[in-house]
Image 1 (cartoon, one colour):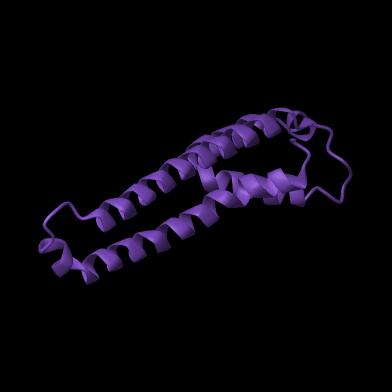
Image 2 (cartoon, helix red, strand yellow):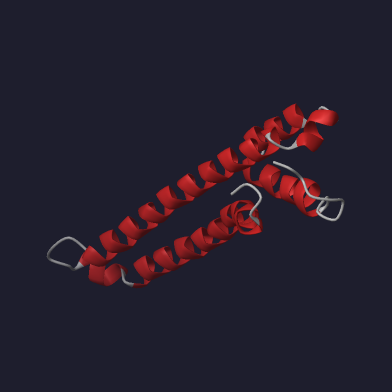
Length: 125
């Protein structure tokens, strides 16, 4: 799984794509809420449209948290098993970058260590 190009790309790009979709969903949710504010105020019971949209938004937040944590674990394991990092003592630098700059760190690692060194030969992980 660590050598799969699909999973490497997925865990590098999924947090950013998910963040972009979450921002769009955030604006759609509040636009729909504020456009129906009179109906929500005059409703006899609880506003199910509001709670349905809020529940979907909360589920998406939890999904993004799990994808981000999965990306962090995937790239830490990939860096630990990468023999090129042990030769140059870059392992600690990459792991600290993953932890402190979580999404950006994985994306930079993907570009520099995986895509950038793909033509140099196979990385045995």
